[in-house]
Structure formats: C-alpha cells, structure tokens
Amino acid sequence: MLTRVTIENFKSIAFCDVKLGPLTFLVGLNGAGKSNFIDALRFCRDALRGPLDQAFASRSSNLQNLSHIGAGSSPGFGLRVEMQLSETSAAHYAFAIRPQSPRGFSVHQEECVVKDLSTDAVLAYFAVSSGIVRGHNFQERPAPTDSRLYLVHASGASPFRLVYDALEGMEFYSPDPEIMKVDLDTSGPADVLESDGSNLASVFERIGEERPEMRKRIEEYMQRIVPGLRGIGSETIKTFKLLSFEQGFEGNGSRTFTANSMSDGTLRALAILVALFQRSDVGSKPTMVAIEEPETGLHPAGAGILLDALREGAARGQVIVTSHSPDLLDNRAIMSEWILAVDASHGSTMIAPLDAAGRSTLRDRLYTAGELLRMDQLKPEINGTLSRPLFDAPFV
Image: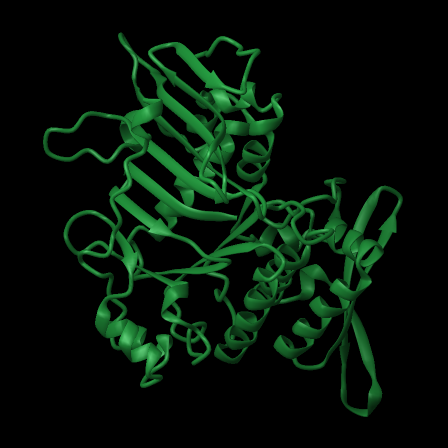
C-alpha cells in the first residue's frame, strides 16, 4: 500500500507531500488539480511499463508541458512514493526527470530503498546519479539508460521486485460508456479491467468463475443502484463476450437488455464496481485502484450506495478517488483522515489534509463532508503539507 506521495513541479503541482490510507478522497472544485495528482502516479506506472518517451507520447506532451514552471524554475519534475510492502518491510522509490542537452530529457536521479520495519535497517538500496549506480545487497547492476527508469532493470533482483510490482500494478479508471455499449467485447484479456472499461464483459465473467461471491456482491450493489434490476449475465459467442441485464416489470414479467440499451450511469457504475471487486484475492493486482469522479451519471441516492462499495473495495486493496460531489461525501461515516483537500486559488495546486475547522466539524459530527463541500468549507490546511525531499541524503 502507498503510504505517502511527494510530487515536485508536475503540471499544476509545484509541490505536495501527503499521506495516503486504504481509502483516500481527493476533493476539490473542477480544475483544482485532483487529476494531476492521479496523473503523476499514472506517469510513474506508465514509465515502468514502457520507455519514458511512450509515457510522454501517451499524453501527447513533453517535459516542458508536464512541468510546473514558476519563477526561476526550469523544466523537470520528480516523484517519491513510500509504501508498506509487508508486515515487516517498507520501501520508498523516487525519480527526477530533467532536460538533456541539446534537447530531450533524461532520468537525472533515481533511488530505491527497502527497509526492515522493526529495526529501520536498510535491507537493500540502489541510487543512480550522473550515470553512476551504487547499491547495497544488489550485486549485478545493469548500466542505466536515459530512456528507462532504472527500477525496471533492478526489478530482476528480489529486493526490488515487490516495489516494481506495487507501482507497475496500479490501475486508473475513467470508464467510457460509449465503448462499453459495444455489444461484443472482443478484447480477450480478463485479468485486469482496462481503464475505459472496454473489457468489462470479460472481467465480469472471470470474476464469476473465480469468485462467485464477489460477482454476487457486484449484482447486489447494482440492484440497489438500478431499480428493478434482477441480474447481470455474461456469455461467450465464439471468442466474443456479451453482457446482458435482466430488468423486472410489474406482474413478475422481465426483459433482457444488452449493454447498448443501458444508461451511461448504469454502465459506469458497473465498471466501477468491477474495478473495485476484480482482485482474485486480497493483495493481488491491481495493487491500487484510482477512480476519477465515480459519481458521474448517478442519481444522488446511487452515489451514496457507491460510497458503501468504495469502502468495501478498500478493504481488499487501496483505493484513491477524485470527486467534487457532495452526494458521494454525504455520509457521517467519512472521517477527516480519508480526505485530502485540493485547492488552486493561489495560482498552483495545493493538496493537504483538511484544515482544523474541517477536522473539528467532522469529528464532532456537526456536518457531513458533503455538507461542508456544499458550503465550500473543505479547505486544505495552509501549513498542512509535509516537507519530505525526494531523495534521502545518504543515497544522493
């Protein structure tokens, strides 16, 4: 589980350093920078899955455009993530990307440290700076390259494999109903749901085969969100997958519809539930699920039901949610520790825990987080951001 994230100079974020829990809500107005926090983590994931230039190309962008350029600053950005790997070990991983003359970019610095939680002793580390690799309990050290993060090379060594798996296994979701309305899912793979939900039928069928109790939970939530829904089916036609929805009517009658007859909100809700409950087992991939505005297209009552699903899903693996919906947060069970307030009123994005007034109000149950959001009172603590540097001095 990711426990802390530090970001420097990425898009609208000049600097942020925040702690994460099993379930974290990034809450703020449109354009505040919630999605930029998520995209910093996604960039890390993408850069571990392929060359760095592909991570830029998939955003149709470059180092200049992804960098937060302030007074006296130059292009470049960095990220540090801290994580708990097991009951006995933790790690941090950091990298910084800078311009490379005469043009382009390179990994300016990179570091990974694995520690024993009980003693804080360093079990293994590597540090890359100016093309030089140093390490402990890491004997066969490949040469670094400008086009790849070094963790990709180091993941062949067991101390760093868990770090690589934790970051490469992050998944990010913004389901597209128009894609899901295509009747036949021809994508084939069913291990992990695609970010747009395009292989929804395949993953839903796989869940039913591996974990029928999880499929039942998905259907139970959907029946609460969609009145009259009796069940969701999946079938295979040759190599294609097909989803069907049985809708009940008065007098015990029913009719079966395919995905292209269902509302956008219904399909988005199903994709989000599948994203939350798709893990084959606790701790399996995805290692973290980030969902952008899951309440989109849902009736306010449905948003409340979705909150229950988010909380249950977070018990099986880490969940991060962006939202500006009072309806999703209109529940007294939501604690201030779950919320990171996002604000951009001072020219750059500030991400921090709630200020003292917000924390006190939620603790005393005077208002819900949703009610505070309606009153524009979910504000970040001005001095609430931490100040962890990207790299640890002994490894620089």
